[in-house]
Length: 183
Image (cartoon, rainbow, N blue to C red; front, top):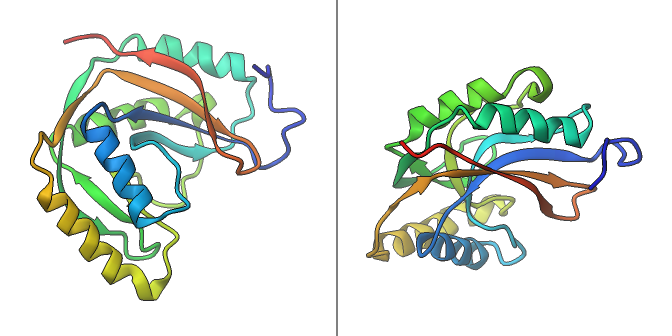
């Protein structure tokens, strides 16, 4: 693991996510790939949106260990689908658990992790992005139909956060895992 950003260039991004457990995780990952075939991301909830960070990676991980050790696990329940108006990102809304996600984001998105985010933080699960403008309605309708057909639980526990890095847009890699305290 690299100890700093030196040598990475300006396109290194870091984020903090919680992967969605099975069986919902695979369903959402497969749905995302179905809607946007070139997308290969595992389904997740983002706690810290992608951002460049100047501190050494080891220091970032140490700070996350200190901060996440104070945080409790919590339940998330997913609700309906929607579309962000400016970006045409199709996403699943978060009902129960939304407050906890916002509180974690606000607690962690400062000091070493501070970054001016391009949009206000809005907890969600992305299903499709970077789709042609003229395809948004059709992709949204397909996503809604598949979500309505899902007959298994639409909730899950957030009990671990994963710090990830993307260098030069080549894909995300897991750097460290951070378990949350059981309530």
